[in-house]
Image (cartoon, rainbow over all chains, first blue to last red; front, side):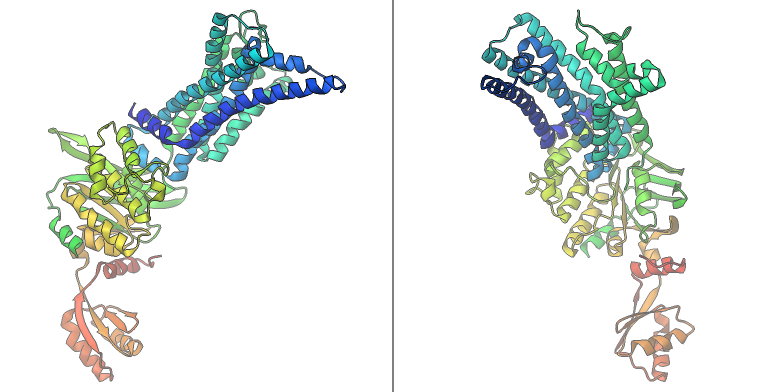
Length: 279
Length: 316
């Protein structure tokens, strides 16, 4: 617990993670504002005689921003932006310790090296909870504004509250493996940039890569065991929703994502315990 | 001079409790042997200096003791009696420079270390900041600290948990003479408070001023481990002359001269005071009349060079 207290104290005093959190919240609002503005601009253009654009029309775009679709649009936006922010924070939490040389200062004072790694994961988990909560709340607020302004259908308050709470928890589960992988990659590489790049690559490319690999190898299980596929299952598995993977229900997907996060923690501890901490 | 007097006053007795017992420490990095079979101990109340050329293995040895690098073989025994039982000695270490969190103030940096050690007080940190002369700068960000302030904060951090053993790796590196003197003045006080102190340095003046015993290492191996007075045994004769080259050539011919070092118009002749008269006669016979001649005790630097050069390599 001492390691966690010390780690949280430093995170609390550091500006960049909180700046990133606020930037993520601003981006959630920005997404709603820009989407709203583009729908309004398209409507205006059509009313002035421009041809109807291909794909979903301006009305569908605005509908997607409303409270009725908060469980998909709002949570997807919040999860994406929170994941990006947390990959950056995770890599910086560890990479800067290597960069400043502060590992030599702090590690000998802790009960052991595993305590240092575990404290990093614990504090990242706490910060991830705050980031996800802030992003989800921002998406909810923006969605409420759009719903009122555009006079869109309003779900019942109780159903909405449940959707928000459950959605926030799901989003937290969805961001956890990416942040944990970025943290572990930084422990392994000792570099903020490499940790961030690996976290970003996994976030952006892993779903496509495992889908291609599964198709080429003729083993769909490769894709089914991937992070992106299971994140999708966890985010979409609501009663009545079509969960596309037979036999892959939300608890199993949850277990697979937890395994990724725990695997990253185990890898970071096992590498860090044997590592020399001098330049 | 004051620091030196303090150090002499603190000399640990031979029976003082051994806090650090390094036994046959060895560490290799790939095919490079950084430290080989190194054994020494540090007792409570003494300051041991570890000196050696660059790449001698000083920092690796300090890091092995601090638990930052695992030895390939050998053992670091850190035991002190506590509450009537043998307990693991606490270490406070500053290895490879004063590294702190740049976005925290000096006070906050000590605070995070206190939290890591499970303490919540803050009063000890405040007292230490005052002791190392950082009370006025305690609330400034570390990134705004000068090199001297950083080193002083590092010493405060090293003793924050009231350790039994303090390891200071090159504590005066990069400091101006005033900064070096400030740090040198702080070190004997750490031992006076009952701690064992290990200082690595290639600033031999630091070691001579503050240490009681010296471990000389080169290429990872111990060349000597002895009290400073023992290492400095022997004399040199210092000669001021207008013709240093000829004077050196003549002096080297004398059978009682072990070596001659020329520094400008000064010659350091490695011989005892009992040979001064014979040396003067020899020089006069060759038409050389020095401006001044005086025997004196060897400095640690001269002893160090004698040891390291005798083993075949100059200090980098």
